[in-house]
Length: 253
Image 1 (cartoon, one colour):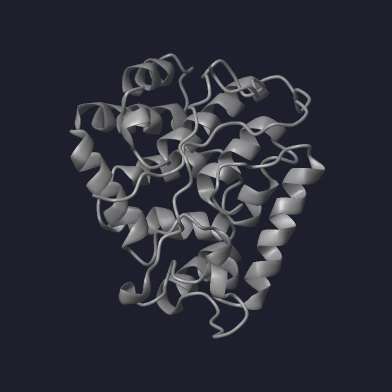
Image 2 (spheres, helix red, strand yellow; image 1 turned 90 degrees about the horizontal axis):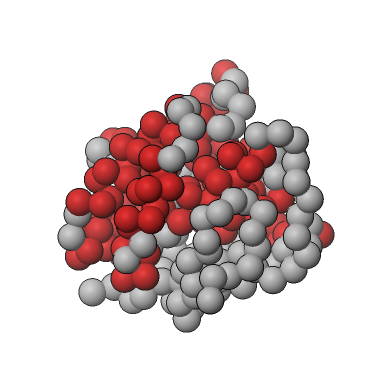
């Protein structure tokens, strides 16, 4: 049995301003992805019916189709199977870690700077992630994108497009249903260019940059040798946010 994980909720802070028309629907897609990519603990699995209903109510789109396929799998599996599969694909596989800065910077000091810059981006937008996870954990990045809107909120996702592509490929290779969630997310981002495709192929073959010093608190993910993996320490569980739209920043009580 793995340790309980954090349930991400919108952090305290000022509300972000609405974006252009359609931002609410896009924000809801991103929030659903944030929830479904979190560890499937008892709190999340207890909300499966509500999550499935919300997914089925989405307007038709490529992303909504991928979410519906995942929701059908997620709704039917025993909790123990969901937990085991999540640990297998995200904690124990070297190329499908959910910590995005690792793919760009590896275990180098630049990764530490990237994590600080990401946390500063959140604070500048009036949002502070209090989930207990690192700021580059994909569900955290997705929650920020849902709240802050396409221009500011989705900038970290666009910056880490190559890492997201690699996670998608790795999940597809093992036929994980979670590959559908990455496909849904990628359908919301600009398409990759030739340079992106070349970089992803190189990253898959060689791994990210390596450095032995300067990042001790962040080691043990991604392409590190399997025996050295140490997951982040769990934080106390928090509440699942209501699925009423991307601008609702208060946790359900």
